[in-house]
Amino acid sequence: LERGGEPLRAAFAGIVERASEAPPPVQTHRISWGFDISQANVTIRPGDTVTWMFDQADIPHDVVSGLRGAADAGSLFKSERQSTGEFSYTFANTGVFPYHCTPHFSMRGAITVTEDPPSPSPSPSPSPSPAPTARRKVECGRAGRCSEDAGWADPSEKHEVRCCSDTNLGGGWRQNGGCDVWAESDGPEMGDCHERKTFVEAAAICSDAGARLCTAAELRADCTRGTGCGHDVDLIWSSDACDPDDDRRQLSSSSQRRLSSFAPLAADGGSAHSSAQRESAAVPSPLLAVGAVLALAAIAWTVARPERSRYSTTVTAEPTAPGSGYSAMAV
Image 1 (cartoon, rainbow, N blue to C red):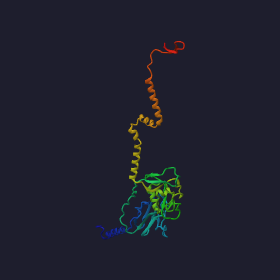
Image 2 (image 1 turned 180 degrees about the vertical axis):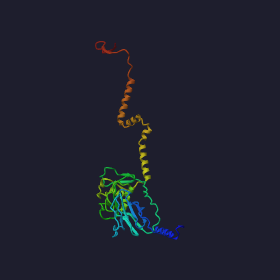
Image 3 (image 1 turned 60 degrees about the vertical axis):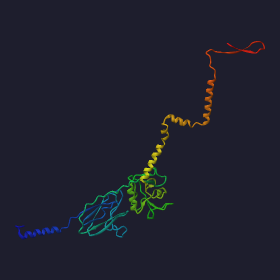
Image 4 (image 1 turned 120 degrees about the vertical axis):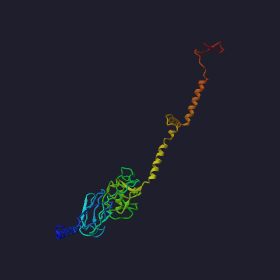
């Protein structure tokens, strides 16, 4: 610069100025899209692209621009309903652009497009919801139709999903006789049939449909019977939780009952003789009395009989004289 003088210095300044005026490079922002919506709101520059990744669970979602139920919903962008893959859209203009998932009410977010966005921070990876520790009751979708028994299930097990609502949500929601709730298995709010879901997934599906998991009593009363997906013969998640303290008390009580069944054997040593004593105790008392009499008679006869000689003795009777009778003679 010193050798070229002022012209060279001016040219270099112009290059620096033009470089500073150049627009920043466009970027692609990736959002993990599912029930965890911690990444749903992002701020970007015009020309940037947002890519939604359907990577959280095997449940179909979509991405639809606008507010839910608005007249212009889906006019800017709208993806297919899918459980895997990606969907991208490039935002050319500034503004705030809300979006949502059609079948799941809790899934919504907004893209803010501005010329001067804040410095980007690393996107946090989705953290899984803490798994509940209490076991949950699973009941048959229709009384007497399941090949498996109802019972308590670990929250990580996978069972089928049916939802209940205290109000009529319309569409295919059904109220069976004798029930105060409406039930559904595959209505538009639920997205489709749901098979082999954990308890957390099942609860989220019903919550996003504006409903809840049914109670075990509602399932036993057949309030979800005939609502579709073939779940009449499947075990369905209920909202009933097993109190861990009650669970431990039940197990302890069961163990005590099993141990008490061995108490009689422990008292008499568990021997065969003790078993014989218990069996003899069941003999009717009249038979014992007859046996005792016979035993005493045998003892009396043995004591009373005379001792026999080693010689044979025969007693005969012969007449002593005519008309005199008989006399005994030993020979």
